[in-house]
Image (tube, rainbow, N blue to C red; front, side, top):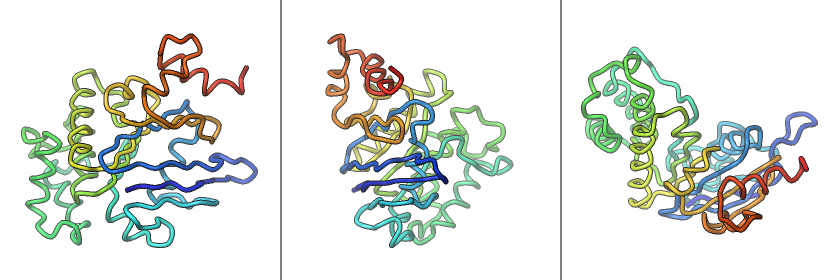
Length: 243
């Protein structure tokens, strides 16, 4: 469903991403982990076509994001960190606007809007303006906008950052429901508890390079103490250059 092939990004003399590769298959939730400044967001922006790579590419459901960006983005849902929206619009009107932009994949705008509202559990807030919503409901609205065209691949940058425990639970349940429907999902995060909560696969990045790729249990096995602690495993993989 999604294949990332040797992505690199250079900004002048600084190489932010140094050849990142991985695969996310149908029904998988990949946790893309790394410390601040590791290159996570830069990689996500290249995968989604928002930022051109210096080298490498990403293939979304068989479509190369560089060679065929329109087809690739048609199969892609993107929830960026601090997703923008038109805050004076109601949730329903905003989603109708997004669906109208995606009309090739949403021929029945009203039906697409109601389906997205249901999937994001926004029924009680659909006629409320976005500026009056809590952060959790604003995040759900952005989630609904990302999935309104029923994409095959869903990419989410820090989807639960700043949410309270109940809001985190709701967003994680929505992610698991999407995976159960056969979506290939990437969650970029620095919150290690997301691994146990929703992920079936993990990639750890540091200093622009992949330091680990495998299962959550495989990541726990990287704990030098042998206690299977995610924080110790993460620290051992991402702080080696600092020792």
